[in-house]
Length: 187
Image (cartoon, rainbow, N blue to C red):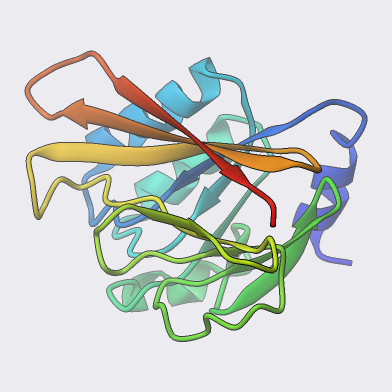
């Protein structure tokens, strides 16, 4: 059984918020701010959808002492030798948190409905779509603020009736995060 699944099961007794980020692209400071914000808002599990860029981001995920999982992106070739040191995987990576079957990848190439939650990055554009089968397809946007001067991440909650996606945004010249709460009904 993967270590991340074992860790996640320790938290199954409580409702869990999942923090999701992607495309940090060597912006360690912005990555740390996004991770801290997710934790400050109750995230009990963290997911990084690739293009991490620097080992320091993985080390920080390890340091914050909540379960996490990350996948390699197309710009993470130099990090591929660290898979035995961190909860870092090739894409697509399947795992489970609180009974949710999750498929994690960087590229939006494996968008088949074989999990409850499909997380991807790469496009640097936030998107959240709940399809008719109740499956959620989610891209948390970019932490690095490459395509726009905004860092983004997502705080996710799930119940039997709906997904609650909180799109978190911070202008890079500001300290305050702004939150847009989106309710998506399971069909």
